[in-house]
Figure 1 (cartoon, helix red, strand yellow):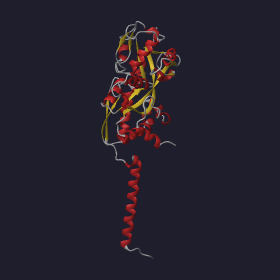
Figure 2 (cartoon, rainbow, N blue to C red):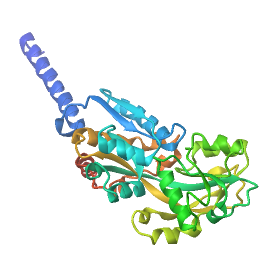
Figure 3 (cartoon, one colour):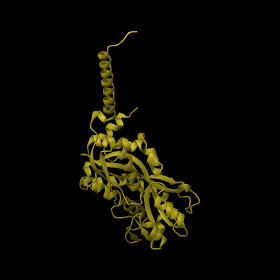
Length: 331
């Protein structure tokens, strides 16, 4: 029998251990973009009203980020919606947010402060515009809202932009031909149940929890908006970001609609600023894509986040860090 001297055995064991450590170190380096250190610190994500899809999406994304970037604290900041979200990011009051493409286009068109510094991270899911009325309401189209008390969204919301455009396209003055009520989806359902409003506009992923829950305790109906889409699209930027869409009947199974509802949809964009760290943005983008299925179990709209379309963040240029991620996963 050939015996290996103890000194040689120890040397081989040390070499083996060194090789194992080298492999582990290389693995950690490979999992980190270009061997960069893990991001740490605190970032703010501006969401939306607490009962809306933006905030629920942000809450679930925050949980995913806590797993992927444990040294980075993500603080959620509720907001009125897209317009306020963009103002916060542009001013440096928030680092990431969600906003509709038409709101982004208007912010840039109006040359609001910091508009040129906004960058796209990902195209997420589409918002569906919803006009909700009590089931027995005579309202069959937007023009029938004349003289009605209509919740049109808060001043800083994307809903307000869309509702004003829809009313104007239907030939109604948003200030004179209706009684506008400036509230969000967090209070719209209760106001309708109490009889204090006759209708409300909402723009969100399908289904929106607040609308679904309202339909389960109060008889509602969704009004078609399809007759306005062509005229809206013909009015140019930022309305060119709207597309024709159909809400399936089972989106709100308890609503008193006997068929699908023609409406319009607009893309949501994940937005940051040009000076956000490329390394942080790359990792943030990776989590958005990898967490799609997990988030989609609770926010059904998130199931539509698609790697093939996420890169299209028009009207915003893509952030360098997000672009780096998309290049890294390109087949």
